[in-house]
Amino acid sequence: MNNVRWLAILPFLGMLIGTAFVNNVEPLVFGMPFVLAWIVGWVVLSSVIMAIVYACDPANAKADESDERADR
Amino acid sequence: MNSALVIIFLVAAFSLGLGLLARSGKQMTLEQWTVGGRGFGALLVFLLTAGEIYTTFTFLGGSGYAYGKGASAYYILAYGTLAYVLSYWLLPPIWRYAKQERLVSQSHFFARKYESPMLGVLVAAVGVVALVPYLELQFKGLGIIVSVASYGSISSDVAIWIGAAIVTIYVIVSGVRGTAWNAAVKDFLILAIVIFLGIYLPFHYYGGYGDMFRAIDAAKPGLLAFKPQGESVLWFQSTVLLTALGFYMWPHSFGAALTAREERTFRRNAIVLPVYQLILLFVFFCGFAAILKIPGLTGPDIDLSLFRLSIQTFDPWFIGVIGAAGVLTALVPGSMILIAASTLIANDILRGLRPQTSDETVTLVARCLAPVVALLAVWLALLGGQTIVALLLMGYSFVTQLFPGLLCSLMRNNPATKAGVSAGIIVGVATVAVITLTHSTIVGLLPFLPLGVNDIHIGFIALALNVIVTAAVSAATGPAAAPALAGRA
Picture 1 (cartoon, chains in turn blue, orange):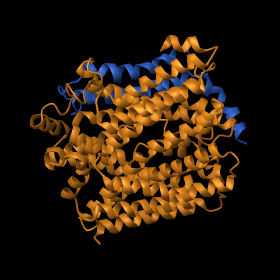
Picture 2: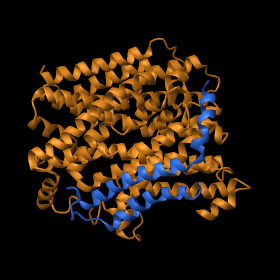
Picture 3: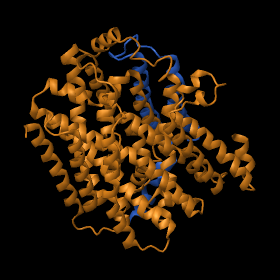
Picture 4: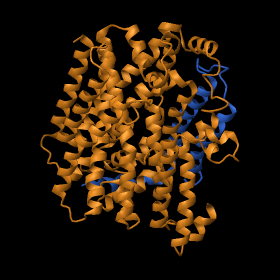
């Protein structure tokens, strides 16, 4: 988990730093200006990355029972 | 009254009915009224926090910004995503602590963490100040929708009053549960409409997205990418960072997070919510489609672009359906914001100053304050002058000032002291207020800086000052942990 967690930095790098290097209209991607498509790509990747982080996080695996019990 | 208005008013009445229905059988204590008794499952929390994004802000503000400012609108897509990534680690510890201490609000959270009721009052005050422009923009959106859908027969001023009255009534009768049910209806409706419009308009008028963007690029070169100056890449970066950090600092988002039944809800939402953001794309497409078809809207009028183009395209009954969705996108968040603001004043500011105030009094005061806060926002909305996006960014500049203090409080050894955090928040908020009210720029004040610095969002500069002050004052007032933070700053 500890290493997988660092993947979450990628969306920040991609959107904040990366955008500076792709600030162009052409080429259009799926009809969208390139810089917009770049941001959209990172939105989708963020979901994928968070799914990986979630799957590798032990807190989500064993929390099942204790959370249920805490509810009652 | 035309068919568009009939549909809009039927939907408003329906949502009011849902709010009343949701209330039945529940006794309204303060915890019940504000955080729904902490019993919401994943779906409702999802809708409350996700529904949050699909407010008037995106529906009218997002399309308007795409229409008027082009690429600058892209920031809206980026900041929510980064905020959700952060939420994976930020929200569970907040929720755990709040549950353990039975806290219902953000300001109680600060007050307990820093053992300082006065800091709690300060945090609540910042929250109220930030919420007012947010509420104002919902009312402004309502005004636009109802008046445009009435084809001019209802003035936008009257429409603002009608909308404010509906929001206030259902907040008073049902609290947050009413909001949650309406959020479900609203999300479904807005999803369908935005996707439809975002596909139909570009294809109907231009034959496709590529053709639409090529036409815009030819007519207005430079609009579709960030500008070299002004709303440049630097503006984008600082604005996205500011708003991503501030995303959960809103008293009502914080409050929505507390409604969860278990902490895994947040982690699961962090996976789904970024993709859910993509619906914003269709909102942008509507705004872009309007650029060449409804030319000439400027200033605050850019927020009208989606509706003007729809009116030119569709029959009145369909304008009614769009308008109804738009009305819900203002009513639902509007009611949450109103709950948050009136609860803040009653439960956090009033009780912070007079701790002996009873629960009954606080609940009563909160309910009585709802119309007062609504009136204030109506008054500001009637004054007008700002675009919807500008209003929200102003709110963000204030509310993000709470982030450093919150982050420090979650660390095992909190490096910040209550004096440090208070001083930091005050300096941050004062910076935003002074720069905004005097209409000055950073380089105007400090001429030795390069001109590009002006593009950095003012809220971000205030945040930097805030961090420096928090670190310095904490170093001066806190004995043990001080060197660590000072070193980092």
